[in-house]
Image (cartoon, rainbow, N blue to C red):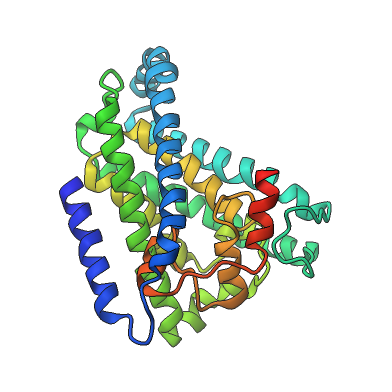
Length: 304
């Protein structure tokens, strides 16, 4: 899967160079972006190793007993729902507190405040998408992962995790970038589907999944699980990835400098024509990467 992922990323880079009409590859931004990417890959790998080597081995007998009692399908559904709840609702609540309290420090769009009434009206769709996402991931993992991915006595090694983590991030970035950009450039898709998400020009953490259900499956969940399915990754490693991925999505939509992207995704919500990807690599290659004007001040505050 590593070879296929690198081939896909290489072909995407070549496509970017040949189709970025009127735009230039932003080589000056790539070093900045790649630094964030290395940090993300390293951080995810360390968390995965901690879970695989220290936490899960002791839990393996209990998980196997639960599987024997509940069956694999119900166990995977329970694990997926649990990690999704912790990743989205747990992190979402944490990252929503500053907006609810109208904290100014670290805020990306200084002149915008949270509309609590609009957030309450958005919650029914957010709840629907939460359960839709958990169900989609459960079905995909059960149907497309090999049997070895459910062996709780054979957790992945560090080299396997390193390969998988790199592939997951590359695949999710490439797939999300092209699907997301297509939803903006195709007027029908934007008006009928993606515009729902962009009713929030100054987002808050919970609206990370406030979107048309079709978008949630195609643009949010599919890019996230494409890499694990391609690699045939262990379901335990995938669960950790989903938890952290949903937390990162909530942070990127928080309206504050929590996610480590220097406000790039918030800038996408403000301008609509930039920052279509996740890591920024694909945007830099296509000439659509842009940091908010407050990015320098944010970086300075982080260093302090």
